[in-house]
Length: 400
Length: 61
Image (cartoon, rainbow over all chains, first blue to last red; front, top):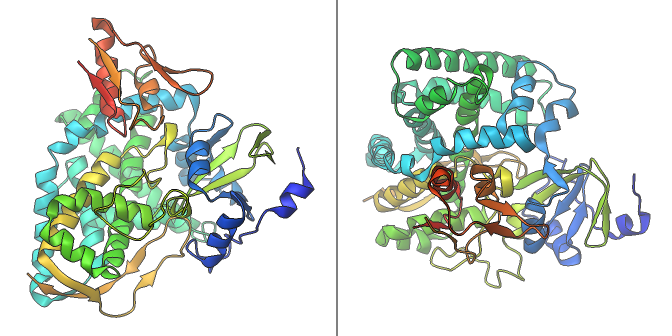
C-alpha cells in the first residue's frame, strides 16, 4: 500500500455515500476549483474534464463496479450474473464477448428500428395529448424505454409492463438497500432468466435476423458464446437498456422545462434533436459517475493511487468544467466537446447507438406535439448521484 | 482496401482494437496505430471495427 498523508490531507472531501449528497452541489464546484480530485468514502472522485477523459481509459484502471455485490456481502443469482456479464469482464474474455455483441448493436441494425421508435412515441403521446397533462415517467419514458427493448428483442409491445417491472425490481440491486431488497432482486433475476430462456427456445425454433438471432447464431460455436453467456447477454440488454433510457429522457424533459426557449427552438427545428440529446447528456447525465478500480499502485497528477482504490469519474462535473466549457449553460445549438454520459474506453456503452437513436426520435416528436411544458405537481427524484433520474414527473402542456 | 481514421474525432476508446486487432492497435504511448492498406482477409474485421467505433471515426475505401 502506498500512503501519502500530506497529499490526502490537502484533497477536498465529498461525502458521496450520503443519500442527501448532490452531484450538482456547490461543494462539488468548490472541490473542482480547488483540485482535480476529491476524497470520498469510496475512494477518489475525479472532477475535471481532461482528467476524466484520460482516466476513463487509463491502463492502470479497470472497470470498477464488478465488486458491488461483494461490497454488499451479497451472493446468489443476481451476483452470479453481475460478476459474469460483459461489463464486469476484462482482457480476452471481455474482448471476445464485446466482439460478439457489437454487431448486434451496430448503427446499421438500429437504422431499421427508427420508424418503430417514431410509431411508439406517437402512439404513447396520442394517449395523453388531448388531456394537456401526464405523468411524463409513467405515461411516456417508462413505456417508451421498455418498448424500445421490446423492438430490439422482437417482442410485441404488450410485454412492456412485465419487462419494466422485472427491470425495476432487479434495479434495486444498484441502490444502497441492495442487501435488504435481496429477496425481491433474486426473484426478479430468476424471472428474467426464465424470460430469456423462453425467448432463446422460441428463436432457435424460428430463427430471426435481429439481435437475438445474431446471438443465437454466435452461440452455435460454444467456444465463441456459451449457453450461459448467451443468456447473460440478453439479460444485460434488458437490464441495461430500460432504466437508463427512462431516466435520461426524464432528465431531458426537466432540463427543457427549465429552459423553455430551447424547447421552442427544438419544436421549430427538429433537426436539432440529435444535438439536443448530446447537450442534455452533458448537463444532466443519468450516469453521474463512471467507476474504475486501480489494478496496481500508480501515481497520477502527483497523487499516489493504491491498488484496489475505487475511482469515480464525475461526468456532470467534468462536462461543466469552466476550463473546457467557458459558457456551460444549456444550449442545443452550441458546438461542444464530447460528454461522458456513455462512459468511454473499452467499456463504452454497448447500446449507445440505440439510446441516441431512440432519444433523438422521442425529443423530436415531443417538442413538436407538446408545447410550453411545465411541472404540474411535485417531481419525485432518485438520489442525485449514482444513476439518477425522476420516478414521477407530473407535467402540463399545450397540445399542438 | 484503404483504412483511414479521422483523428480529429477519435477518442481512443479502442473498440476497433477489440474488433480488428490485426488492423488496429495502441502503441506504448497509448496512441492509435493502424494498417493503412489491408488485404481481403482483414476486410470483415475492419468493417466490424468501423461499425463498432462509438465516434464513427473509421473510413474504409
